[in-house]
Amino acid sequence: MELRHLRYFVAVAEELNFTKAALRMHTVQPSLSQQIKDLEDEVGVQLFIRSKRKVELTKAGEVFFKEALIILEHTEKAISLARQTAKVEQEQLNIGFVPAAEMKVFPYIMPNIRAHFPELTIDFQSLTDDAQLQALKKGEIDIAFTRYGANTNELVSIQIFQEPLTLIIPKNSPDAQQERISIKSFEHHNFVMCNEEASPELYRIIDGFFKKSKLNINVVQYSTNILLNVNLVGMEIGWSLVPQYVIPLLGDKIVVKKTVEPLPMIGLYVSYRKDHVNKAIDLILDVLKKQFHLNFSF
Picture 1 (tube, rainbow, N blue to C red):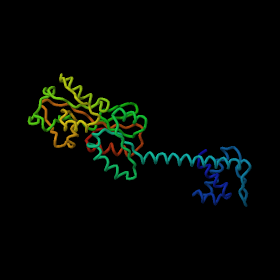
Picture 2 (cartoon, rainbow, N blue to C red):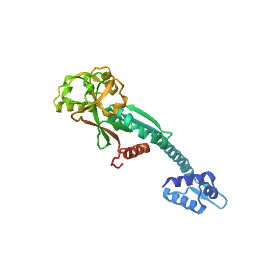
Picture 3 (cartoon, rainbow, N blue to C red):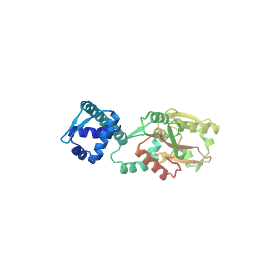
Picture 4 (cartoon, rainbow, N blue to C red):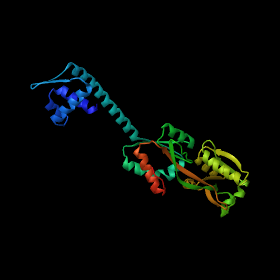
């Protein structure tokens, strides 16, 4: 038995006329009569009394009619709720991000999202890498931009790009006049470094670089965000290693210095759930693929 059989039955029961019921259901009378016969065969009882003058429900038909109305009502409600839920999910996009994405990624994806999904509501959530990935697993955000990836049974992570770390120092520092600075001189200066809890991947990369280079660095201040790094350097509290995207944010009291030895790189990743059905995510991935010349399928 299919829902169409119930809909045909209800139409005939309400009209008590096969011709009118056929017109209402946009079908022809012979086809409708056959559908009702098939239904009666499946139910195993006669639902209508047919005569040349009129059509009537049998006692069994009256009971079936009441239950059929309830079934169709619940079905329509279920369909409506499912569509509403899908609509809400489609019109809401929750994006987790670290500051680098604001500068390097959002200027490319946001105009495309606005052009293709003008009614889409977007909620931006500035979270640490781990908090984003946990929120992504729980369905609290739809897409994440983090400093490291996490390919799992549930998630897909793709590296968007890598950028080098950059040395920034106070403009009034005597070393500001040097063309290049050796990392060996880092030991003679105070440093401002990101907090491990706030920026775990940046901390891991910088701390690992110092240890690998066998440098004994005097960290005088740990910062909870990258702008604090910048401000503290501007106040001549110390030097700092920051991702390259920060350079446009520097004031006139800070200079960027090249180093004799190469500095480490740090990546930016996009992550999403494998079972996602949001078309806006597909658009974001397509824009990233084209803009950053990435080779992946989704």
